[in-house]
Length: 278
Image (tube, rainbow, N blue to C red; front, side, top):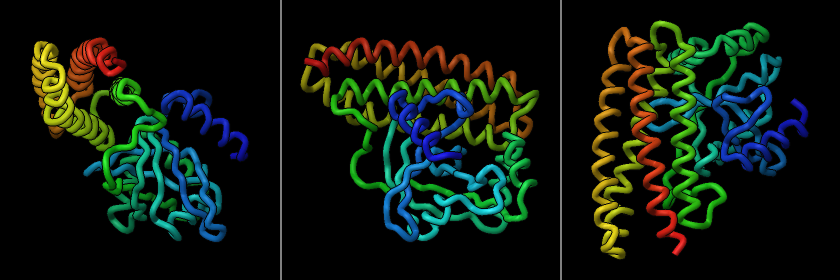
């Protein structure tokens, strides 16, 4: 695609916290920044992604079925340390090109979730690469473009809202049963949301309660809501882990989780953002 098109997508992505319109509307998209294989200059490209196990994400070097690999692929082969922006966090990651059976399984999951990947492969004689991006732990998370506690909280919450909306749309469009990739998407949401709440329970909430004793009832309510949400996450994990996971049952679980989560996020924002602003 022309560079000016990419630049417009990048601007829209950053301005709207990961949401874009046009051909990428409703798609899973991230910004991948690589180091030029020859120039050493930094290049940012919007690419589609798939969640994977262990917190990894996968990107596919399809170039829409072009005869050559995209430039960003050659860059990360030469310089595997890359930067990822997902609309909420910006982080460094290690890029690993999948090989053999691991690549075949990952690409098969991608095709099962969207047959456009198969169409791209059919257009070219090259084997389209699948690349794993694993975050490099290096200090606290960098919440993209935010400098205040209230801004950080809102951006993280909006990322959770966006992810659960994506999964709901994917489940609704899946037919009677869930494919392997959609199961991974659901399990990745469960893991991410539980990690976020664990961090709040063990870090932010005790700190606020200690500094502002008058917030003890609020902190107690938020902690109790975390338990309710954790129970809904456990139910969703059970549903999608069934050998023949039913899409209708999964959609019902996602809807219950979405309703409980939105009420929780709205209450947390209403209580904590004014406190942070003080």
